Length: 208
Image (spheres, rainbow, N blue to C red):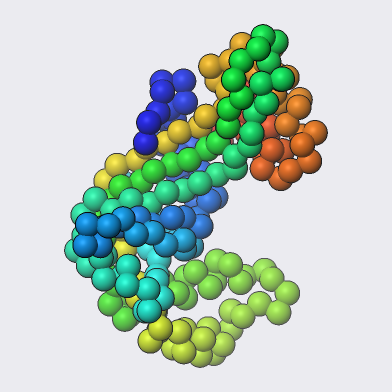
């Protein structure tokens, strides 16, 4: 990923928090010389100072066959994004697009059945706990997971490299920067409002 110095994020804890917040990722691998991708939820954990990521694909999705002892696989964690109008600058300039994105490279292996069972259980607990009519009873979870197992293939991803980019108008003049923050919420779009929030957070030096 091309990252000019203005937009590079080096704060490990900030990047890790971003990844945990945006866990619906794009998984990119190569099959017979052709890039292929899937959009899936994943689960992150830290093991001995290494970020480990687990997830699963439908058995009918041939991409899982590219994940057995594979190296240099790419995951893309995408945050909010928004159009930035040139009319928001004090001086005429080209419009642009602000966004947050993290590219992660790593090595993968397929999970065995017991590992997949545990991973599916962890994911269900994370997203079901606290909901009305939550499906987290031991009996219900076991029934759902056993039903699901034949139809999915799980994998583990060991992170070897992280490239993090927050393109949030850091290269603009202070007056333009503040005006962009003011104008974005007027778009009344969820992503525009969130980009304004992230720009305000960056301006205040809050990376937590």
